[in-house]
Length: 234
Ligand SMILES: Nc1ncnc2c1ncn2[C@@H]1O[C@H](COP(=O)(O)OP(=O)(O)OP(=O)(O)O)[C@@H](O)[C@H]1O
Ligand SMILES: [Mg+2]
Image (cartoon, rainbow, N blue to C red; front, side, top):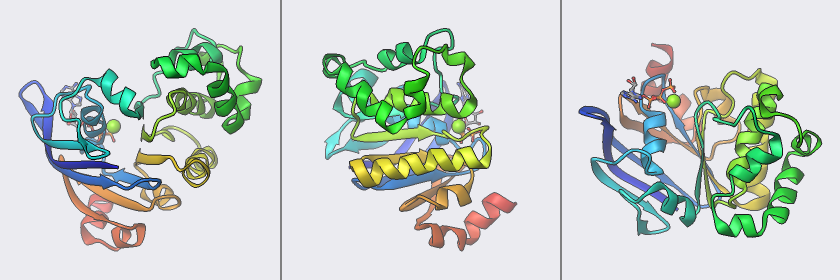
């Protein structure tokens, strides 16, 4: 569904991505692993067109989307849950969800889309009138995911949705992603720091180190890979 080849990019003159290669197959969960500063967020932001790729190609459903504007990429069916969640704290839960409806198709079907995300996150339904900044960390993470689902994406990309959460809540968030894959067939590209948490749900993974995807495989392949051990344990 998504194929990234030889991707290079960065900020200003500062090259961060030095060769990112990855594939995400339909209805699977693919994890992008890597230590702090390895370029995980830069990779996702480049895929959705928030950063201009310098070299390489990005294909989505066999269509070349390299360098295309973000709104067009969203229209094609890719949604990003950004690092740090970026919810609108002063707005209510429901207003945040309405802000997620960038696409006319989502606005036209708002009632159905809300019903759908509330079925996945009943806790948000109970709290729909509450100001987002007063939600707990776990609920804020759920809201960020729900907002990305409003547009009915084919590919959901998440940048550390469990950041800062207690293990129990992280597991709850990851099991929701698993459900989205198993029950809805949604395709997921997940950035996760914790390789063991990622291992609970991932079908395939890549290790990013200094802007290069240096290892790939199933969870078992990866945890037994000396480069992965070195990256995580020093
Ligand atoms: N706006 C920016 N301008 C310049 N350099 C940046 C900018 N944002 C990130 N960087 C640099 O790019 C590199 C990769 O950052 P990135 O945020 O992609 O890493 P990451 O793998 O997501 O890390 P983390 O796990 O901490 O979120 C880092 O060295 C960072 O300092
Ligand atoms: Mg990051």
